Length: 310
Image 1 (cartoon, rainbow, N blue to C red):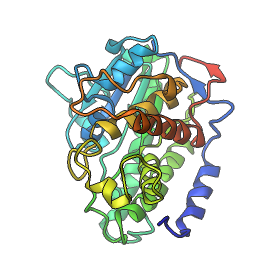
Image 2 (cartoon, rainbow, N blue to C red):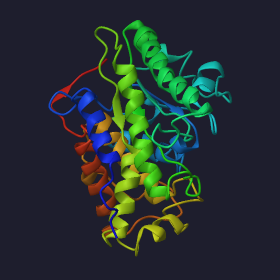
Image 3 (spheres, rainbow, N blue to C red):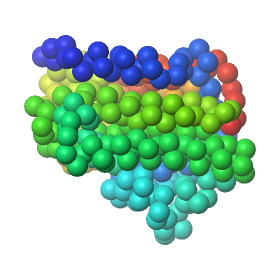
Image 4 (tube, one colour):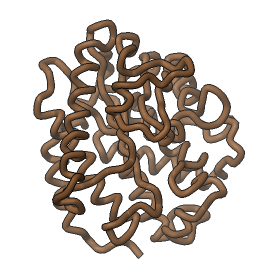
């Protein structure tokens, strides 16, 4: 059954109103733009599964770009502060020290999010404030040093907790909704001091996508899934384990990325040929594409009113 209305939704609405409008004026960047993705394993699952160099770069190539123009700068489990102070190594590009080479920064925090509604006091308060400030630090640096000093635009990819990591919320789904408030609060904090000329931080709403799929599963709208618990329990395409996206979710997340960044219509993109051990059938592929498109559009992305380079 769908969840009953939550008071958190009024808080979410308030944060959404406080953030810059990104609908009619949202910039859509060409697939040829140089983009670097800074994150961890939930970034890898969203953009870099399947055959090398990953299903995300393969989609960018389908759009007319180059897979080589999509940089992977990830460290397992890492928060943004750790990535600011430590290079990824193994020949991977460094999103902090090497930002001059990139026109777009797509970045995410690690998935230990502590929203104020669940953690009003304690050590989580300091961590919460620190992570809000960390996004501002990265955005200011990207704008000052990115793209050869001309400034790099920033996209903030929101992620989700492990299925069993929802305390003190009553369920994983309720924790997602509480976390969404904090993801938006971080952006609002950084946007309050946006440098002159810098574009607004754009959100790639991975957390919102998870809420939507869970709710759709509860209503019997997801092909092959009986309910939300079946979605979480599935290790045959949806999840690799209790937190890492399998190929079905990986496809949906990659569609979401290219819809928000490039204004691409996922319905026009392939769902096979990425080297996955499991590929969605036609009905599920249509669902994944349509849902990613809908979430991108409802969160201010996916339109193509202008084309711009930072």
